[in-house]
Image 1: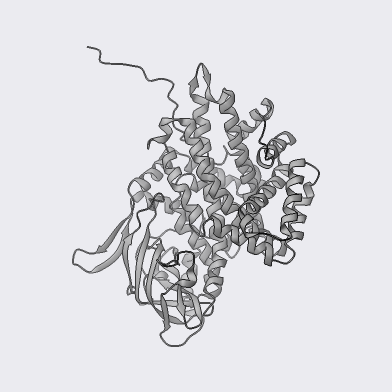
Image 2: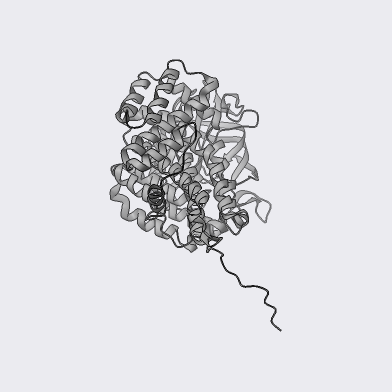
Length: 542
């Protein structure tokens, strides 16, 4: 008897075995434009490897089998170790081999190393975002450690600058590679780190590079398996930053206990913990009372990575939606050819065009850290980018899910994992309000900020009336920025910065379409078909 009830047809294949770099024309052009064209061959190779079905499966496995806390060994001895699925370790090997954790800090770092590193980061984020947490914290910590690490711990620097991933529990000088985590927030304070109660007392002398004993707790202790953490604690001189190794120089375990791993909405592959310190040894970074200032230096890098990660996940969600729309038929036509769906996909493609261009421009500003104007540019637009991109990304991924319909809501698709992952970047390293207040702080306290913005924006004056109108409005508000309007001010500045890049890099038709969509408050009209066709070809690598 024939039990077959139906044939399977009109079911699009999932997106796998694509080149994540070569299929992204806006990214390829921006990498070249911002001075990292020398890295294009490697990026193409990395993009091919990461876009493979095998790499995508590693991302699925790492999240399907999250880390476990091993608090005790079989004999009852305190262990405090975290066990990961093998997929996690393979992902970490790739990240370290591609130097996503240290490329700009090498002694002979190549030109525009920040740009190349940002592009590599974005490719990895499309496959698995949780593994980027230890990488971005290590990246942010290295320049601090290069400057402040005490003489007795200088042997940490060589493995920190290697291209190896080494998960073994050993003292730093014996390892091939090292990772650094962070422990800032406590139960009672969260973002308000000045309310921290963890205490630090010197074991002998006070001062930079000296050893202290830390007693207290951390409510969020990121990547507890790291070789060391940067931790905030209260010393006599105020809130201070300490370097707290997992193993002490003699090989004994430091005096901290992992109480539990956090159960998180997303970011499931990555371990976040609660810990307590019982006189744990930490070495002072900088001077007492400089903790917030030291961490803010690190925070600029990690906040930039939050924006990169959210943008990359938006890119992946859009790629999945576009690939689906090219295959799925409704009423005899592919979805991508249905007018309303085509308009939605073009709208998403325009968002990504502007963000890609600005994020690579921002990476270039980080590469030019010795230039005062570029330093101010990165100081202002890093929190603006984090706020806008990370906030926008949540709805963007949900919209991509709608393109697929019910199958996009099911776990067989990558989209539910991307959707769960998106909010972490809005929250970690300062939520939206914190970012907007940081932007406001730069606008009110940075001398010459209007001149820096004018130098950036006036170059395209007269090319688009929507741009000119918004810039005039923003300039009036910059005379006396209001905290209650910080959200719209932050979004407006980000839109203008994207607009500059769009108008100087895209053909006029696409640039005009971007300005109408992103800058005209009345909404945007339907794109002309030739512009829509070229836009979708660029989005798919054509």
